Amino acid sequence: MTASELNAEILRNMSIVVTDESLMKQLAKYLRKLVAKKDDTLMAEDEFFNKIDQAKKSIEQGQGHRFSTVEELDSYIKSL
Image 1: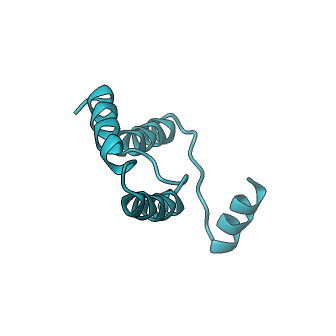
Image 2: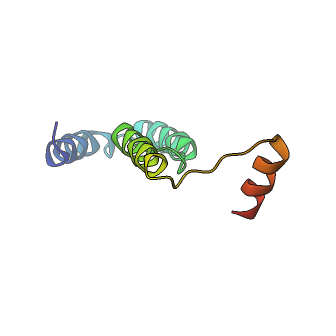
């Protein structure tokens, strides 16, 4: 379903909801929960796999990092 089709469907349903105060209250409650669930740290699956592919290419080009100890890794992460 395209964005414009989704938009049209939402607007059709909203025209029904706005005529009923009880439905409006339920919708407002649901929307608050939905917005609270939004996680800005999430990324799309294709974006995730693109990042992995880019990291593999960087390692192949010798741009990776090697750590002998956990302390070295910890120090590197803290420096970022």
